[in-house]
Structures are given as structure tokens and as C-alpha cells.
Length: 460
Image 1 (cartoon, rainbow, N blue to C red):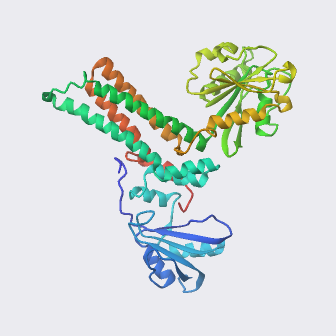
Image 2: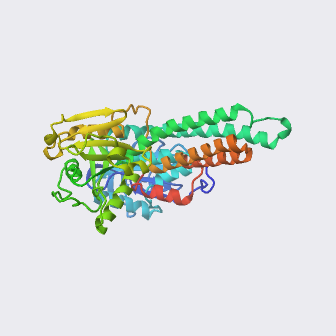
Image 3: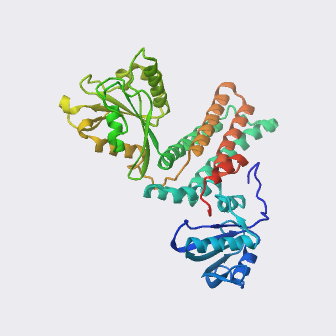
């Protein structure tokens, strides 16, 4: 299972409403635990057959009928949680659901914590951690694309990729550690191309997974888009156009925006976090100087940078030439799009083009011209135009674990190539495996489990 959390036989039985609160045609109370069947027998005064929908009266402690509905009993271990599970399906009125839930408590159950059903499924090896998280992600999906990716994660596609990487690391560890532990076998793995080639192939495979995970993480958590540029280039106007409301103050006075402004929008269900920043310029005003400092920090932290340029000032589109300070930033892991604004004054044609790999969009933001080109471009950046048939939903913690695993593998390459240090290579491989095991829950701290499952809705 994992090094710090062992699956255990839970003593208590939990209960919760598994359908949304409020009025509805159907409401479901779910029970899980060793007393689930006993509690149900007291409520319906009968013993339900396994995996069969039965019609019964639901009785309270005083034998008064609360409701009439269906009972389905799933005996362990063939249930979602791996324990005895019962679903009481009645009419979805809040009073009925409250009375029925209270009845289960009167007979010995307790109210489930958020995500506790999924947590028990994980602890009882019915699902791994990525599948548990996919349940919540499927419920929270804001687009059809995100839902499709979440269901693939729930089916185990993501876990399979991680397990394949772990298995490759294990095989390489076995080879390296055998050479260290049994030197009499005279396996010259340091001079053998096998280890070096296997490392290269392993890193390439991990990079492929990283690309998909970055896409899945953006679909789930959204892309951070920072609007940057010189004063009066049209940054605040662009924020207002994208958000659909007057979020930022617009004046002809340079330096109006002195702090960070944030808006959260959806483009066809894809979440975007749009950030407007202070105009980039050299200034002696301490307040504006702090704003410029924060602007550069937002650029560093962004997934996507929209560099807005007043088309009247320059024909240049290269970010480093437009603003030399970009030379000092590592923009390798983010996309920069140049927005040439004020085409209504320059006479440039509205549209989108690529110069080498740089996207340049010509707009007249004041007149709302070119906005659709930008929206389409942002959708493509998040993956709307990418073939995601093999994709899966992912979280920032997955991305972080994969990055750490890659760093350890790259460090191991250096140990092999430069230091010829087999023991250090073996340790780097072990650390890379440990980072990947965090994703599926093979190695997971109790604190991490608590944070993950507490974010689930009650009843899941």
C-alpha cells in the first residue's frame, strides 16, 4: 500500500446523503462499514438480497414509516469501498433525507466525513489515489473535455502510465544495485551503454507523460494568463474585454494600474485566470516601482504571457527586443504571445500569425476587434485543439511529483556520466521512484491524504 498509511479494518459504519441537498425526485443515503447490513435490517425489517433492488418501507426507531423506496446491498469485498455498502433510495425531499439519515445514526452509524467513502476505497485497495481524485474531478468537471479526461483517469489510464514508469525504474535499479552488491560478477555497468541508454529512454517516456499531465492540469486548475507591457499599451482594456466587465480603470494617464488585478473567466468551460499588471517602465515613483516589481514576478509565475504592444511605437515583435529585461527571465516553460494593439490607428490587418514559433495577434482592443482570435488562441494553448483522446485529468501535485522524478533521473545521468558513482545513481533512482509512488499513493503521508479527501463532497 504505502509506507505511512496501512489499510485497516474500520470498526465504525459511516452514512451520508450521496445525492445533492435540496428537493429532488430521488434521494440516496449511503452506508459503508461492518454494521451497514445490520442497520439496514432494522430500518426495513428484512434482510436484503445482495446486488438486488428491493422495494421496502423505511422505518424509524418507533416503527413509523419514514418513506418507501429501494434498497440495494453490496456485500464486501465487491463494493465501491471494499466494505459492506447499502444504498437507501427514497424520495429526495430534505425532511425525508434528514429523517432517514438520522435513523441510520440512531442505529449505530456516524456521519461520514467529506470524501470518506472514497478514502476507504483507497485504503482497501479498490482504487488508487489518482482514481480517487478523478472521482472528485469528474464531479467538478466544467467542460465535456475535462469530464472525458477525468473518466479516463478514473478508469486507470493515468495510473497505468505511472506504473509503467515505476516498473522501468525498478528494472534499472535491479541492474545497477546487482552490479554494486555483487562485484564478483564483473558487471561493468558504468562502462556499459545499457544503463545510459535506459536512462535516456526513461527520461523521454517521462517527458511524454509530463506533456499530457501539464495539459490535464490546465484543464482542471486553469491557465494563468498574465497581461504585461508598457503603460497605455491597452493592457487594462484587454482585461476588461476578456472578463466582459469594467474590472480595470482606463485613462490616458500612464501608470494608472499600479497593482495586480485578477479575473477568473471560462472560455467554453476552460478556466482561465487573467492577471493585469502595472505598466513596465523605469520609474522613480516608489508605489509604481513596487507595481512594476510585482508585474515581473507575475510574468515569471505565469503559464501564458500576453505582451501588449502599441503598434504605433514599433514594428518589432521579439519580446527580448521589445523589453530587454525579458533576456534575464527563463521563459522556456511558458508561452509568450505578442499582442499588437491599436490596429485602428496603424492600419494593420486584424488577425493572427506566427513568426517562427511566436504567436502575434493584431488587435484593436478599444473597438473589440481581434478578441475572438485571442480567445481561440487561448483555447488552443490549454489544449482545445490538441488530440486528448489519450489524455487524462491531473493536478498540480502530480505535475510536481513528475518534475521531481525527472530531476532525480537527470541527476542520476550526471552521476553516471561525470562521477561514475553507481551508489549515487542508485539513490537517485530510488528517489525518482518514491516521487512517482506519491502520485498513485504507493507512498503517501497521512497529511497528504487528509488534504486530498477533505476537499471531496460528503457522500463520495
